[in-house]
Each structure stands twice: as C-alpha cells, then as structure tokens.
Image (cartoon, rainbow over all chains, first blue to last red; front, side, top):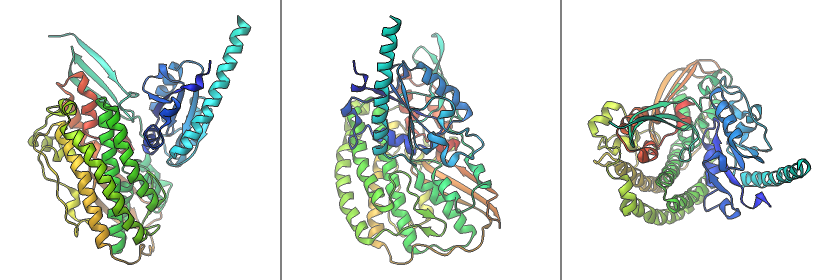
Length: 147
Length: 359
C-alpha cells in the first residue's frame, strides 16, 4: 500500500506575509497543477498527510500549530515553506517571532526562498512524499513485529 | 427564539488563506453576533526600525504583505523621499505606476479566484488563477520576482525595465483582457454566482462612511473616493475612471473589483505610451530628518505610511495604517444577521489581508 500515490496537503499560515501562502495556492492551480499527482489541498487536518507551514512562529500560532500537527494521522510529514518557516527569515529579529517552525514541531523538509517559488515547493513536496513512504513502511514493520 | 450556540471560525479554516478567528454567535442558522480576535500574524515588524537602517527597511516594508508588496514598498519609499527632499525622475514614477497597477491586477484577480472558491465554484477559481499567472510572468520578466519584487529603493528603482520589454507587455495585456472578459462575464452574469452574491451584506453609502471603510468596498456602496486621484507617482497625467456601484452588496463589490482590473490595464497602456526616458535613480545623501505621512491607494483601499526620523541612520518610528484594518468594523456589521453559509463570502468581501493588518 503506497500512501505516496495521493498524499493530501494541509496548509497553515503561522505568521507569514502571504507571499509564500499565495505561492502554495498557486502550485495547486493550472500552471503548476500538483493535483495531477493526486495532491489535494484539504482544509481538514484529519485528512492530511503533508503539513505545509509558511511563516515563523509567534506566541499565538504556537498552540494552533501544535494542535494541527497532533490532529493529523500518522505517518505525517512537515514541510517548512519559505525562509521564515525555516528559521524566521527577515522577521527573526522581531520581538514577537520565536524563530522557525522547528521550534514547535519536527520538520522533515526545509524549502527556503522569499517568497518560495512554486517549483521549489513542488520539489520539496516530492522529497516529503519519499519520506512519507519511508515512515509508512517503518510503521508497517513495527506493526508486524508487535503483531 | 431559536437555540443560541457559539461556533468558532478559524484560525485554520478551508476558505481562509490566513488565520483570523471569529466567534460566531448563532441563533439557529442566523448569525446574531461575530466577535473577531486577531493577532495570529503579529510579528512586530514596525519595531524593526531599531535594527535595520532606513534603506534596509525597504525590504521589510515590502514584506508587510506578499500580495500588496509593491504598494507597501512604494508607500515607504515615497514617505522617505519626501522627508529627504529627493525628487524622483519622471521615468521612475511612470515605471512605479506600471508596476503598481500590475500588482493591483494580480491582487484583484487573486481575490476573484478566492471568492469563487468560497462559494464553491472550483473551476472558476482555477481559471482566474490561470490568468493571474500571465500577469505574474510580466512581473517576473520586469523585476525577477513573482510576488515579492525587491525592485524599489529610496530614490528610485534598482533596475530599469527596457522599453521593448514594456512594448511586449502590451501584447500580453491584450491576451489577459481577452481571458478576463470570459471570467468577468461568468462572475457578473452567471445565475448561480449571482444567487450567492446579490443582496448579501448590503451596506448603504451612509453606513460605509460612518464605519470608515475604504477602497473597493467603499466604492461599491456608491462613494466616489480613490486616493490615486491625489496624484502621486504618475497618476496625475493619466486618465482613468473611479469605478463605483450603488447596490452596496457583495455583487457590487465584485463588479467594482472586476472593472478595476480593466481600468488598471488601461492605466498601464497609457503609462507605457507616455513613458519618458531618463535616469531611474537619484543619489541619496545623508540621513532623513523630519516626519511625513503618505496616503496611497492599495488594491484593498487607502493605506497610510507615517515615518519619523531624527537625522540618524535608523528611523524613529514607522507606522502603517492598512485598508483591512479600516474595513473590519464593516465586516462585523455585515456578519450580524447573515446566514451561516454566507459567512465565508462576507469575510472575503472586504478582501481581508490579515498580515497587512497585524504586521
């Protein structure tokens, strides 16, 4: 059973400037069209396999991000889209930003860029899908071992 | 009286590209009250003036928002140039106008797409964004960036846009207008679309004035006000109309934005025709000293930039008043008494840009 045939995507804007958000959305629209790979942008964390987060983390989004991550079923991967999500970017020195999203949840793929280009994002998601498959097979092996 | 319940809406919600939280107090299916809570995207960007000097702040200003990025950079540069008495060249002003209008077009088309998505017309959303890519291509060609351009600097522009490239834009604009005709026809004449938009969230011209709204939201209620007529950049020499509608509902707002896209194309065409030759940057000497406030018309409405400096490398204060902030009171007013199913459309009607508002 390969989960990578149709991974669903959840996008959350932690505290991004919108630049990366509209690029995440743009990658689902006709020019880049990730839907041809079976990737659908869903709004429901319980249906999602890939969490794409844009923007650095502030105090108010920290809890939301944790909740979204915990509501997603295993296996799951996290893609940090844009330099702000990777380490805070230009807003790193702002008083309300505590840094990249890896200060809150584990990140599997970092995609830098300001704003991130859809091509780079798609590349990052393809890498994330490989990690997702790996996690899935590990999960299956664990299941067999424990019976 | 029905049963009262409170429905939390957001911060993560399928129709919201950005986090904003609303507590909707419902009576059966009717919304009786909406209490917004914001602060999810607050970064404390204005305080960066302590750490970045006045020229580096252009980068920060451009990143207030990724959709109206050029406008924010423009407003900041305009204010600093006024403080420092820098007279930008004619060519710079025309090029800035062209880029500003291109970003207005991409912002409005983006909004049309999101609106279509909010009432569940997926193919119309996809179609709008397909057309938007053509405008992004032009912007990428001219500046090197798709959404954040980083072409502005205090005193002018970082790079020139060659005249023959601008000539080729005229051809692309024609293509875009042809595509837009079909999309706008669907938005304005389709029975299903109209049934979701007409009569939703009506505000009279007195009400919008009283609530202090701005931008297309204001003009959709019949108030003829557009900060571009103040004549900054090259808008003084360019002939364009202020689009208004008298209905004041979401259909009127869609109409105003759709027609503004076509107006923007008209402005770009005129600006390319009239574009003078000349330098694109002026020398910047010394540090700013004084204060200034600029008003410009962003895609979402009027934005104000206040800059205060004391002759040092770092500014004392930067303050931005964004259009969404002015429109949020109107949002809560329209939400009161609406159907639950209309909530996403009404939120989108003000074209919310939360990252501008919270910075």
